[in-house]
Amino acid sequence: MFTVSVVVQVQLRVSEETVKELDGWIESGKFKSRSDAIKTILALYEEKEKTRTFYKTLIERSDEVKENPEMLIPFEDI
Image 1: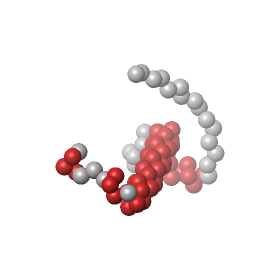
Image 2: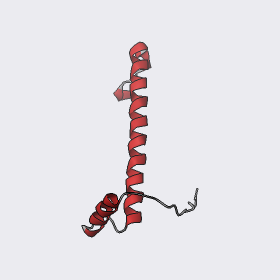
Image 3: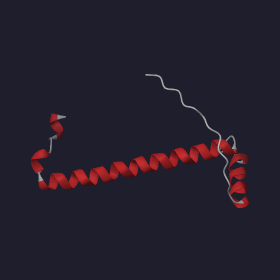
Image 4: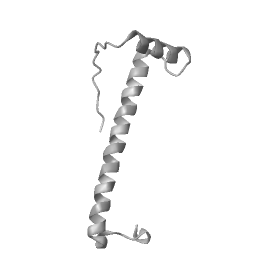
């Protein structure tokens, strides 16, 4: 299925120090623009949160299996 994302412009206020750091990253070639840097940083944060949620799920499932080891499926059966 094909989905279309609508891009919305937002205003962001950050310190001069942060802008200088962003501009330094752009000058060093890490990012193409301030916008690119901020979008990348947000994407990395989003991925980190997904990883955190996945880890939490693994811990919960691990606790469930400790209480009910019959839930385990041998690797050979996968």
